Image 1 (tube, helix red, strand yellow):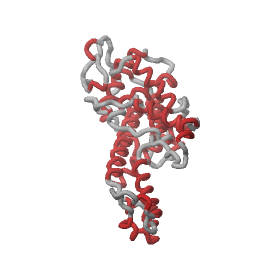
Image 2 (cartoon, helix red, strand yellow):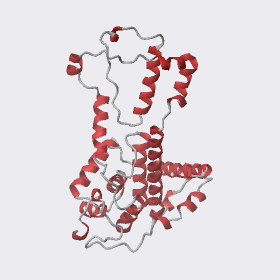
Image 3 (cartoon, helix red, strand yellow):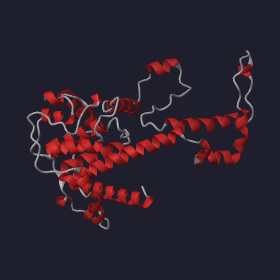
Image 4 (cartoon, one colour):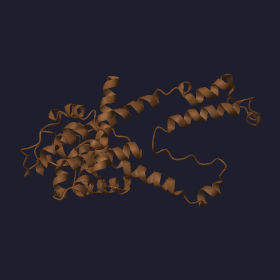
Length: 312
């Protein structure tokens, strides 16, 4: 693919560029023309289990995937903004502690003196309670990241920390952290997520089931397992990987690895590494039945209705 030999990290992928020797499909369309809002309005009064996904077009399905990732990106941006402006006095837990008479102790925190011997002085009354409050403040801010390691006990001796084996939970957390980093780019590509999905749909024409399965995988990673947050730096690799895994699981007729890699702006080696990482993150639970797909569509419908009610 001489005329589009790039990767998303190079920030040069163009929606108008055509891979060599790859014909565009005569079917399909753009996500903006999918009339997803009309479809969601039609099924607004239906129960999730009664939604008929068999009549859903692939264009509607990929529009649902697009809607999901854009909402998740917006959620992650809002969470990041909220964590930066976090005020411990507005936290309900800390407010209850302050209501018990701890607010007067904030000015009594022991200062670190430069003079020798001050370290042995006893702290003022209530300082231990104040430290609890500040520990909560620190905890609330640091736990915004799903990869924060559990705190090491202050009572553990250096020899214990060197000889004691790591817990399975800690090992699993570090492994997930390494796996999720593989999806991150240094800078956002030139294509946004909608244009990227349009490109995939233009050349690949996957089925409704593939797009809905891909949406479910991402929903599971972000909402159920809370292993990562979707951002503009990882959404492209998450999308192409989820779609590739869904294609292999659902479709009988599969595109070659080289073909998918060219469409996604990756080389085959990187795409394969992303697939393996993705499977480990979802614990190799990649079978998605009709009930899960209809539940996902119901979630998208309810989310859209909620956003309308909030005026967003």
